Length: 84
Image 1: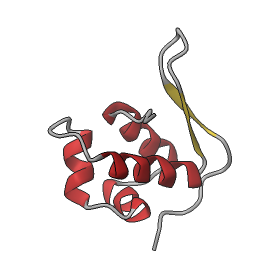
Image 2: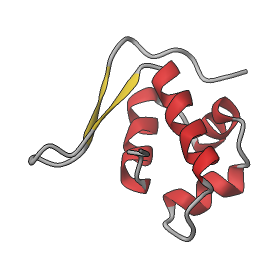
Image 3: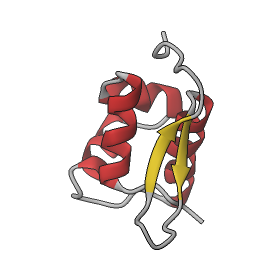
């Protein structure tokens, strides 16, 4: 089950200090795919959403599922630098 939403994606990048290009590269997805997702213009294919979640997880962002208080995220460990 995918947990990431456009708002959570933007917030996760903020926690990491990453721009959209950093996350697109870390997730190996197209920059336009990420831009359109965060702008809520289109929903990426499931494999691209998983790639975003995987890249954020690898950088230390933990997605917290809806539990009555709303979905959220936290930084598990000190984040790594954006991909080269």
